[in-house]
Image 1 (cartoon, helix red, strand yellow):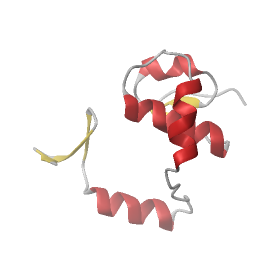
Image 2 (spheres, rainbow, N blue to C red):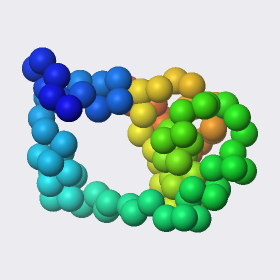
Image 3 (cartoon, one colour):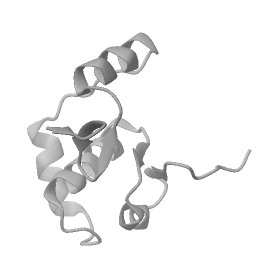
Image 4 (cartoon, rainbow, N blue to C red):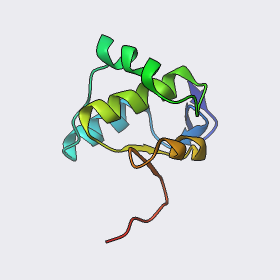
Length: 92
């Protein structure tokens, strides 16, 4: 969905289209992860810190793949080290 000055993605506005973002991420070496039925089933095992089903699916996917989920949603931080808030600095 296009928003004034960018594209709306969840509650954030991106200054570029999602297609351009995906291409840039792939060119930078990021791997795209498919969502599987196992990820969907794993959402049932998560503590109820967040009610948004898509966010819970992303948490389950990140945990399954052993990767960080980057987000601006502070509520997701309750899921522990799986989530890194954008703008947050990590310890060296």
